[in-house]
Image (tube, rainbow, N blue to C red; front, side, top):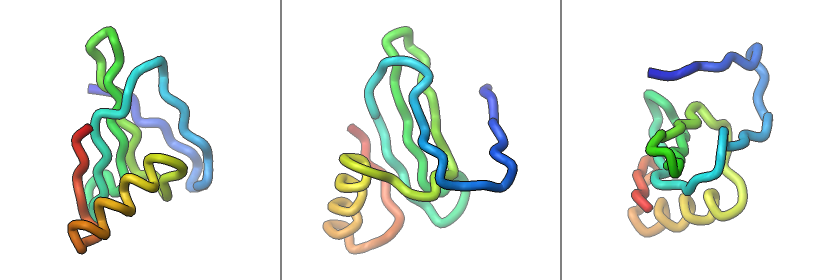
Length: 79
């Protein structure tokens, strides 16, 4: 159960977590959510940020290293 926010067909917005937490999963797929980040929060809630056009910083680095090591575009990193 959650909230899906529309951005009027535009891309390139920065995404910010709803509250403090840690990235628990990064997933890249050619279907479904596409590029997605899962954040675990201290209150037990997980927020999911899906349909990302690109990753930046550490998230991007981890994704690229995983893709290179697995020799495929699609991947799942559990942290």
